[in-house]
Length: 341
Image (tube, rainbow, N blue to C red; front, side):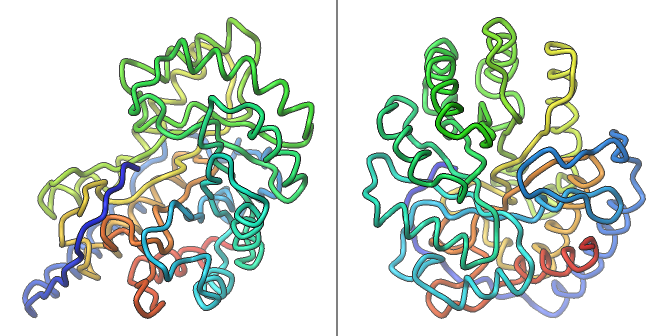
């Protein structure tokens, strides 16, 4: 997710719009439930540390969120009530951006936030060019964090696939020696294919080097300044994006790997469209999106984000000014109850 600060504004809706939004919500939830999965979820295995397979062959790690860089003094790390709300709802995974060259207190604050929220850790190694710190990070966290993504949208940031592969092939074996139980994930592209076919080139590169990832991840923001209706139409496209990645994995590596969508929400804009504040819309979008991921056999997924003033607050699940949960939180909480063992 590319971020910049901006000013959030409330979205007022008339009664007609609320009724229309509720009707649309029912339509898209029904559509998501009735659509045929493109992947036999019965083959989904719990191969990631702490992962479980819940009802309807759904991965427990589908219900995650992000602790990104903080743009507000009140955030997921500072507010115990937000951490308790995530624990109470049953969120299973928190993806945390461990800052480059962070001191022990900063690392401890992030990992403690995950633990106090009752979730498992998915750590982001934010600087792929700093092997000394990356090794220190994995060593410090030990068994408190058993999953790591190598970089974040390196393709979008202009890092060439040759450079990314060079760092991957050099560092991942070293990090695995430090923590043999940990899983290392790439290439963390900004969408399912990545810029200049980054995803395909990554898979070809690791096949050649033999240093395979333990899972594959990408980001999914299906709308960009689209109309509300067009965005709802795209809410179930996570399955198609996952299928694209799965086809690449199988055609290049000749095997399956767990696939994760480590950032997702309705729109990556800064700020994204104000209809994201509409309870009917965001409930319908979120429900359709997660059901689509479940049907596609996604192994892990992290909503972007919990509470950091992301997208000028419009992407947050909690209002950072008063810690109040927003409708997207309740939509995910409801789905957790439906799928949970």
